Length: 217
Length: 289
Image (cartoon, rainbow over all chains, first blue to last red; front, top):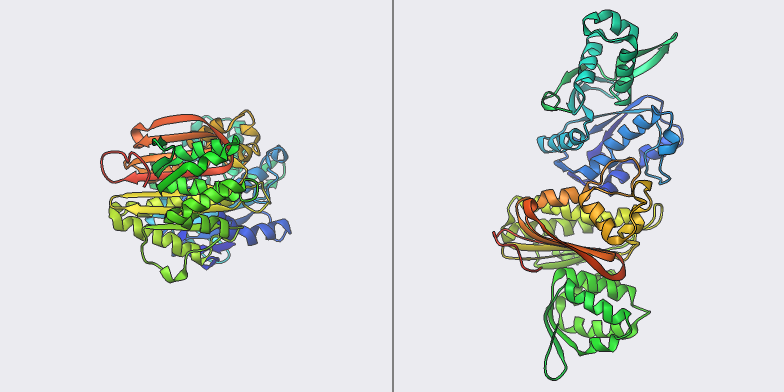
């Protein structure tokens, strides 16, 4: 699902403030409440034509989708959900952004990086799918390494990661935890395969951006 | 305030400090004292605060409203602020993108982010740029937008219409002010929506929390972003910032690395009012424009 911000009303080259973010996401929220958005949908925010943004806008748009996705992975989600109509709810969503100007990308990096959280900038996509993306923001080095392994394998369960990377000296349980954390960070999807979860990167080839290498979480 | 030998009080430029005294006289049953005050000018933050008082007391304290109207007749900035907040008068579309020296814009309902508001925001940016702020004007415009958006986001409980509010700016050579005021529930009641901030018991602490700890009514959404952006936009500029809500106030003067903070209690009054004055000069502005 692609949300092209420059097509949203009110039209502006500046994506500023929580109120504008709420307006831009009103149709998505309504569709989610009606159950019209399939589970596991990746919402791509296309910032083409947007010259500037700020933390409040990011928080009310891309970060809102990210938080909804995170809540969907938590067993205690019902205790964490606010009563407001625009508070994040547990919806199994993934998020990526595209066409960021340098100023907008810097704002995203500051927002997600300061929270120690990663985000994906789509580099190749069509209406159906994101084929490749760049990882930016912040992520723990161990999770970063685990994601790199998973990207190279395409898909894997925790026992498969354990078998493939014995030199890491990590137990199956620890692999399970790491993959589960990546799922909570909305970087990988997972499906049941027998007794195991099988994990797969949320987009095709994920490369690692400059901010990830600079990040010390 | 300064009193002369005939018992008439002259105030050259009314600031937030004097507005506090005015609120005290009005609320503590001495509104007739206000009739002895003559003012020649009002700074921007005080104009927004007085407009909020005028709006709140429009029916309950008629004698004060009459005094305010007398002042407004001789002080154009006050007249403009009252017209915008009380009558909801939007600046003329004829102004379009021309920079202005002083301008007010009313926030009414949820539909303030319309074309008129965009024109107002553009004029602010041009006006600030025109008095020597260069590229910083864009960042200041972003911060002003954030402060205004707070009225829409936080002045009323979730799901309710936002409270009425007022935006204003004023520029002079190498100096600019913007102010935002609303007559809503105030910062303390807003934070009480979030269980994380339940322990806060007074408006002064609530102001402290939103300014310095990123406190927000939003549950599990991380720190608030608006005030972070405000301080970021000011950068190394010398500034004077004033925040008032409920019975609390905080003022900051200096620049980002070394703000001098004053915190105290105020006469209880609804809503949240703030003003920001900054200068490209090296000395901090002693007062608002």
